[in-house]
Length: 219
Image: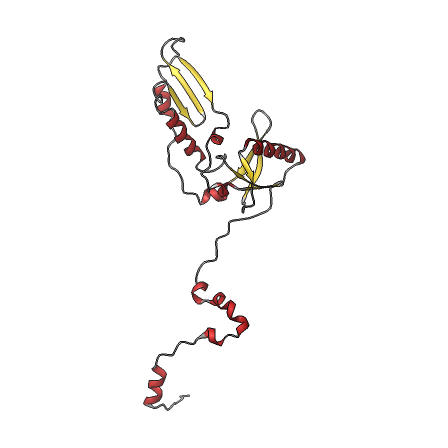
């Protein structure tokens, strides 16, 4: 069927006139005025505040908990970590050392995934071996707890925060497990040894090698 409507030119002009914006705030009851911004259509188009991934703590045996408690106490006494009330996403776990014992590890995978990577290069193995081809004497030095020699930039400690059975903590020194820890330390050790690097010493992260092609006395 066909429906027919009658309309005057005046009716059409009226329908085509731009509608005046409605003052929604004026229509709200007084008790709802403070919530007006919650219904701002512009805000509705925005993404909600970012929240990192959370989750339960990793399960540990009684023995691991005792080791964790001892490790945390030691790090606190050394001033390497501090009790924190900041949001902490990273969790702790243990890895077995090749020669026995447990190594404390912090799972920074979520943080590393959004970290801008420091591309400072590590030494090339082949290039390093070529430098040692004529050397006769070698002395190897191992920098103990190498990454902990570098202070975390003041104000950035919150990024290192981690959760444990015994509370929340944050690092004051560079922790193991963060994406840029190796490149940061390599830059540091290269600068420290810059006057002698590739002359009679080489450094690959925390391993420093002193070498000479002369006699033992010279070495």
